Length: 206
Image (cartoon, rainbow, N blue to C red):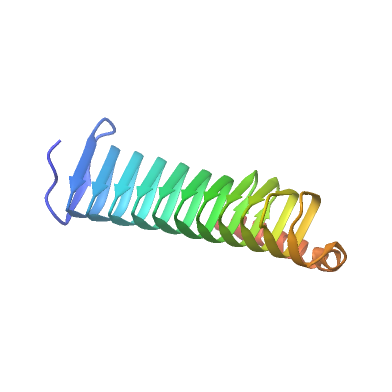
């Protein structure tokens, strides 16, 4: 399909495909959207691929970013390769050599990436990654990774893994933690309240 005019609104039928290179858009709505070396303020689609480009708000079932930056993303499956997101909300999040400020997801898989905070209802996997805070109602696995705070049902660690504060029902493996089990227990009640507050606030916003 031919590229659309620069700085335009692109409203299309559900069956349409929009493929744009080197162009800027205000609003794009289509079944499938591919943006390369351009930008868009709003993108609503079923499948979105953004490569070497940027976007404001993206909402789709499947979102893939390659060397791209997006302000906010909402989707079922979000994949980032050498890209960045300020705020992401998804069912699954896969991040490779990328960064996210805040992620709310069911499951997250981070490889060689940096994230500010992850709020997850399921499993979180960190491989050679750094996260300031991980709050998960599921399991967290960490290998050659570090985190400021980890709160999870179960934590499994590999080599060269460290945290400042670790609170978990069960820990498999060794982890270098500033606060050990005894000190962590003293902080457990406070962090449980913080975690509950975060859940409550996110529920109020949804």
